[in-house]
Structures are given as structure tokens and as C-alpha cells.
Image (cartoon, rainbow, N blue to C red):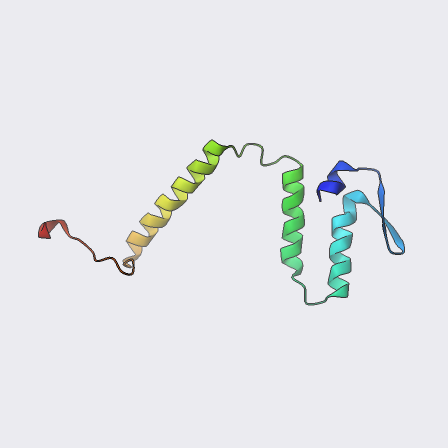
Length: 100
């Protein structure tokens, strides 16, 4: 995917076909799907789309600050969700304030 973004206008020789580099990941996906029918099509397509997303610089806003913020808020929301579900963490005994 990175190569397809970096080399626009060039062509890739894929056996008997010439495919523009911009479409080469998709041609490779189709070729792989034909060669190995049980391969995960959606998973590989997701990887190609993620590669284009990264290659076009769509994640440039994702600095260290935002990674930490996303991680902290994920843990907070997960903890609140766990608490509201009423489940207990295995191996940890619940403590009530009235017994202290």
C-alpha cells in the first residue's frame, strides 16, 4: 500500500497483466483470493484500507497526548462498565465502607 501511494503513474507487472501501482494492493487481494479461496477477504481488505489511511496521513493528529488520552478514557469507561455490570474481578474480594 505504501508503494502504491509513493509511485503513482507506474505500473506493476502481475504475471500477464500490467496493473497501475495505485490499484496493485486490490489486484493482489483478488489474485490471492482466487489462488487461496479460503483466505480472509475482509481482513485483508481492512489491512489495505488501513494502509491507505496511514499512507495518506490521516493519523497525523494521533500524537502521544491523544494516545494517552484514548488509553486513559478506555480504561475509565471499561471500569465503569464493569462496575455497572455487577460482576466481580476474580480473586478480589469486595470491600464495603460499613465494615471498616
